[in-house]
Amino acid sequence: MAVNPWVVFAIASAVVFLVSVDATIAVAAFPALRATFAETPPTTLSWVLNAYTILYAALLVPAGRQVDLHGAKRLFLFGVALFTLASAACGMAPGTGTLIAARIVQAVGGAVLTPASLALILGAFPASKRSAIVGLWSAAGALGAAVGPGAGAILIEVASWRAAFLVNLPFGALILWFAAARLPALKGADAGEGLDLPGIAMIASGVAALTWGVVQVDQAGFAAPTVWGPVLVGVGLLASYALWARGRRAAAIDMTLFADRTYALVTVASFVFGIAFSMMFLSSFLFLLGIWGYSQGLTGLAVTPGPLVVIAVAIGSGRLVARVGHRAVLVAGGLLYAGAQMWVAWHVTATPAYLTLWFPMQIVGGTAVGLLLVGLSGAAVAGLPPARFGVGGAVNNAVRQLGGVFGTAIAVVLVGQANAGIEAFRLTFLCLGLIGLATALLCLPLSRHSGRVALRPAG
Image (cartoon, rainbow, N blue to C red):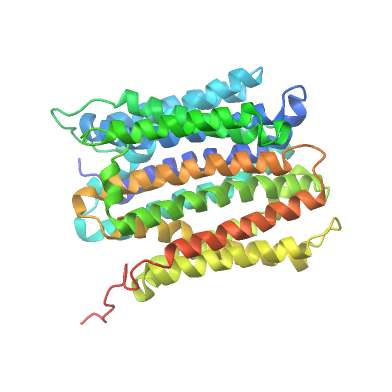
């Protein structure tokens, strides 16, 4: 039976949307979790966010290799089932330890689903349409990441923080049913390298140690052994991984990619922007709830305009890149983001001013995020040979996710406490602006013509 490629695209996009929503929906749940588990320090609660992101990022590339080896449909069905069951465990978790463990399992399912869904749509469409289709698939993921916090806030207002996880169950079951019946069976390779388990362990443990050190700063101070000790351990583990990966064909992250100057610059910029992306969402929710006194549901509505702008800009940014190139789009995105956040830092007060302050920031900031999310993904692989598009995109995505871990940790240190005041938030918005400026500066050395194509009328 012939398979309609748009059906495959719809199923694959639905999954990447769901996974992306779940990567950020816990941000909205953080204040509610802080109230439910009042005896748990915010630094420990932050691992509900960070445990997912760290393992998801560490597994993206090796999961992609397993998809190539065992077949996309088989891994896709496995990933949906695992992700859905883990969502149920999150929603029913009796304590923070169980919740963090369930989030770890969720991360495994999400890490499998992302490359499996991409492989399915690449196999369903002819080569001439793949660039456009991958752009739409990326936009679905960007949309999910952007709307996750807002949708989560509304769910929490209507029900509880548990609903933010349990909502995955009907969607996961529906996708599993459709996927089993409609997806084509793509054969995997007959042989291949196994998982780089030592490499995965070094990456995940190194990032976890660094994150642990960062979140202790607020309580212990920069000079405390509980801060610099984990940081040194984390740096040592990541340095050990760099040595381990050298010359290893099946390394969890292929370090030879960074020999390409453009790829290295864009990936560092993706890491920096990943910090800003997750830091922005968490600090925004904490600010609207704690300083302006919004309800959970009103907070969700208040942050909705930004994601809507992200969708529109992400869809159209591909054609913009084709006209002016990656550098112009990315530098403009970084500067817009910096300007929006610094403007808020200089003008925000404890008195709500949504229409004159927050709403304009959402429009400008959403435009910037739309340009950066899609532009960074495209620029990362623009200079790579076609045979390395998959691994190059996966590594760039993984590095951006790891940046998100540090963004969450920094936000928890700056404004994660229930008594955080307006000056702490002003400092946070200023930091976000500086991170946006750093993203623009990192993209400035890119080739002016990267991503541009000759746009000629048909005929």
